[in-house]
Length: 467
Image (tube, rainbow, N blue to C red):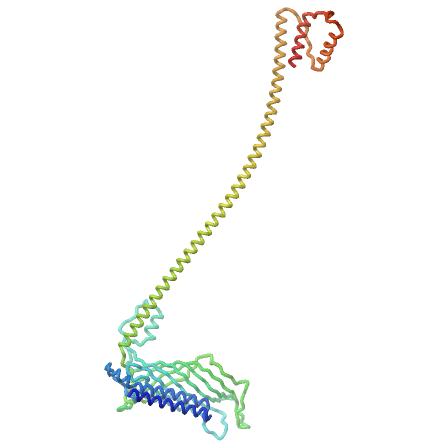
């Protein structure tokens, strides 16, 4: 079964590729129609491949004692009432990608439009649109919550665990919620006033909503789907106006725009859709939960969290080590700077001390010089004082000797004439006269001196000898 299904899928895929290749070579279809063809082939091939894989999945499901959805219960058709209200016929086909009831992924392809309505004249109001949309969805249901969060929980924690979660205190079990992503391509031509726009657009965005059961009869069910789609649009268009006289639409180059991105999100779809399903309603779909897979995911998440925590701890330790290394380097730098500063201070102190020593040496040398000069002056003064004192002593001795002689004479009763003291200048002619007299007269003719003269001459001789 599995090989046969894969073979059929390969044949269908090959035929579609050959068909698209022939269309491109012959030029029968333009780029827009080729794109629609490719989107439809992708949708169809995804369904065929899922069908081809269904025997293998069925075998695994039988081994795991799981139920298998039949092929027709995986297919659904729907139409949007909002598009019908704005005169846009539409239809969408949705297909479950997996046959297992534990996997809630779908792929849908929708077409809507009212392109090229026929008129006998060029109307002043134009409303033409053709849009193709490919959308991927994931369905889920809410579950019961049995606990309240603490009041100390943060705002983001409350937002995460109370708003963006499937756990509710009052879950609506009959609803099947969904979220998805879509891509669409559209050709449009609008003119509601003086100026019209004709161009193409490419959109990409997200969608969300829910489905509820509406009506069921035997194996046929109709559900109601409510939702919306928001995304970004890349578009280009030509502006034109309506010329009634010539019955044509002249282009306005100054108002036309090339390819550009619309600078704000665009609501591309509002859905109030009726969904037709085979075999089962949305009330009984997307309910089964693979708890083993959930537990495995939780365990993988826990292991991942443990790895993150260990990595975080390692990073914090590395940061701490780096910080310690940085602090140690900073301390080493500070200590080196302090050592440098201390060495500089020591050098400065040594220089200052050397300068002070030199100054002290200079001052001591100056003081020694001054002291030597003072000692020399004192020695000179002492020598002078000694000389003066010696002279005074000699004078006093002479005076005393005279007084002694005088006292002796007084004692002997002989009066001696006072000898007048003569200065050395006066004594010199006297001595010369005495020296000349013996030469001129004979020694025999010399009269003996009187007693008085005898006593005086020794004094003179003594005086001369003392001097």
